[in-house]
Image (tube, rainbow, N blue to C red; front, side, top):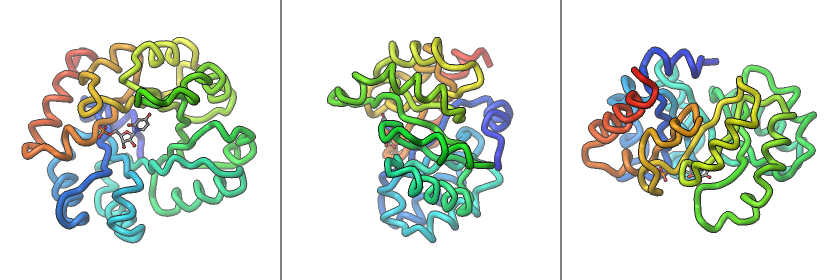
Length: 229
Ligand code: 3DU
């Protein structure tokens, strides 16, 4: 399993790239981005849209080809009964992913997650879009639950920086906070880090840019100003 914080240290970056939308052939598109962005990007978060376009075999090939330079995170927002989640995590780990994102609202996941070895689990504690009332109303509950699970960390929205700060204040120190919502959804690069996030997840403002290298570079430069590197 790749060392997420070690890669971040080495690259002096806190950028996780969200791969959901592609233009043209998905394999060619992903290949072009990952071949170019390795110096800047620490992790690659594979979303369901990409997996559905490429097919799961294609995704596994991508993980294998670029596994030496990136931490691979599966974002299929798992939200099933514990036995099924356990099996999903085992298969994603077997496919080469270093970590997965799960919903915490199904609860009762203690046993399913305690058996997971060599694969990080991140739980969603709130979402970045304005309409996520139900989840956000249970933010404190989800945070408490996440902290009891002994997982690697949580996903908390950069568009709601107050929640990122509360998550940082509440969670055990070794929990990582991944923050989506930077760029296309409005949060400024570096802003979630300033509120206590460990990584920022950025998708379309890089993947949809003609100059994706320049776009990623601008994110990382802003982050370096915050982390002092
Ligand atoms: O908006 P972007 O294109 O930068 O992508 C954001 C990514 O983060 C995308 O993959 C989405 O599935 C994920 N995400 C959120 O945007 C918000 C959340 O609350 C959780 C995950």
